[in-house]
Structures are given as structure tokens and as C-alpha cells.
Length: 327
Ligand SMILES: NC(=O)c1ccc[n+]([C@@H]2O[C@H](COP(=O)([O-])OP(=O)(O)OC[C@H]3O[C@@H](n4cnc5c(N)ncnc54)[C@H](OP(=O)(O)O)[C@@H]3O)[C@@H](O)[C@H]2O)c1
Image (tube, rainbow, N blue to C red):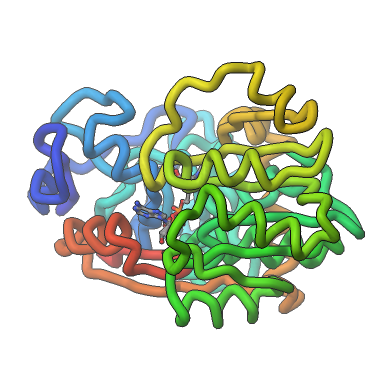
């Protein structure tokens, strides 16, 4: 089959579209013909060597497609089922193996591209608003990169739970998308001269001087200080990513100075570790999509052969919503 392999740690140029042997499903796995593979920021961290993986590295972990073979112990899935996954085998490929325990049956009415776009970023948005901070009516929320893959879903889920979303975005086009997703206020943070000083001041103006109950920060290095300074007393900073680079070590005393605030650095795997939690979260997301309550924006699709282009676009802030690769 054809697949995308990272030959060594490096820039997008290390991604090679090449022939590899077809994967063979183990007893507890299904073999899936990939209809669409999700591109996620974590794919770029692994490719770049920021998150260490062995090389050559089969890239990707997310997608949707049709089951074409099942392992001997698989009890709940059959050939012909449509499934999606957030932690399958290397998914920038024509074929992939997925453990039965990680496969999500795609409901009628959800097309393959939507199904591939939802798992990783949707499950992340879901745990962020339910479990990292239990968001509810009346909460003021600061949310960075609101027009991104996680960002657009997170904005919608936060607004649906009654949060008042103050969104940051990198461009006027992204501002439109964030507003359509439910952001009450939008700040074009690239236009600020001093983000760390100006953003918290803007946030305080918008919250009667108090600051927000929660900040969702997937940008990391460039926004961390502004995020911390935008919290109200005893607020929560959820640092969930590093699209601008990793945050340097933090002195715990800074949490005292910021108002006895909470800092958490969560990761999706810990919020979908057991099947029951995974299917609860995915079920709520698929239900919201079929009810028309959650819009999954696929901002760009690339042929599988152009995975390097997709990475370049994601890393240069040129994308909105989900990026997909089509084998
Ligand atoms: N912890 C978890 O469980 C988990 C799970 C999924 C994703 N994540 C994290 O969530 C974040 C968003 O992931 P995603 O896949 O949805 O990506 P994305 O938000 O679609 O793309 C990244 C966005 O970050 C913003 N950004 C700000 N500074 C940047 C810089 N220097 N370089 C590149 N982008 C920059 C850009 O938006 P603007 O132009 O609007 O600034 C860009 O579009 C990533 O940090 C990812 O690692 C974490």
C-alpha cells in the first residue's frame, strides 16, 4: 500500500509518500481502508522529534474508513462497518489497523470526512469543557487560536454550555469563523504590540475588571504569561498544547501571585483511557453533529501524497478548522 513515512526527525521535507507492506490486524484489531486521515498538531511534534518516536516513523493516528478484515477475537465489529479512531495505527496510509477497543462506529448521517475530523480534536474539546474545568452558565472563558481544529469545536462546546467566550485569533478571516462558532468577543492577538501586557488588560475590560474563570491555552510559549495574567482569583489555566513552542519551567509561586490560581497540563489519553469514557464522549459529539448542534469545519483537504504541504500549512498558521489527507 501507499503511506507517508517520516524518515528522520525534521521539517515537513522528511515526510515521504512511499510503498510499505500492508498492515496485518492482530487478534484484537480490525483492518480499515482509510477514507480520510486527520492531520493534528501532535503529528508535527512527532515528525519534528519534539515528542520522541523511533524513525522511520509511520505518521498519523486518526481517521475514518471501512472495516475490510477483522482479527480472530473481534466481537463487536464486522467487515463493512464504518469506523473512526483517534489512536489507531499510522493513519497517513491507505490501510491501517485499529484496536477494537479504540474503534468508534460512525452513525448513519455522519459522512467519512466529518467522522475523520471529529475524534482527536472533538474528544479534546469535550474533555476540556467537561473535565479539565466543568464549564457552565456564567463562566467567562478565554480561548486561544479559536479558529483552529480544536479551537472551533471548543468555542462551540463552551458557548453551548453557557460560557461567554473571549476568543483570540490570528486573522480577520479567523475572526469571522470564531464569531460564527459562538465567540462573544474576539481579539486579533497578532495585531497587539505587547501581547503579555495588552491581552490581560483587554480581558479585564471585558470582565468588569475580574478576569476569566478559565483559560484554554493550546498555543503555549507565546501566550502563557498573558493567559496567567488574564485569570480571575482562583481561576484555572488549562495549558493543553504548544503550537508556538513549549512553555519554559514555571515557578509555583507564580500561581500564588496570579490569585491562588490552578494550572493543569492535561492530555487526551488520560480522558479516554477506558472504553466507557471514550464512547460517552464520542457519543455526545456524534449526537451533537447529527442534531445539527455541532459544526465540524473541514478547512482543507490534501491528497495523501501531499502530507508535507499539509504540515507546512498547519505549522504556518494558514489553516482553519480540520485538515484532512485523502488516500
Ligand atoms: N493536550 C491534548 O489533549 C491535546 C489534544 C489535541 C490538540 N492539542 C493541542 O491543541 C493545539 C491545537 O491543535 P490543532 O491540531 O487544533 O491545531 P490548530 O489549532 O488547528 O493549529 C494551530 C493554531 O495555533 C495558532 N498558533 C499560534 N502561534 C502559532 C505558531 N507560532 N505556530 C503555529 N501555530 C500557532 C494558530 O492560530 P492563529 O493564527 O489563530 O494564532 C494556528 O492555526 C496544539 O497545541 C495541539 O498540540 C492538545
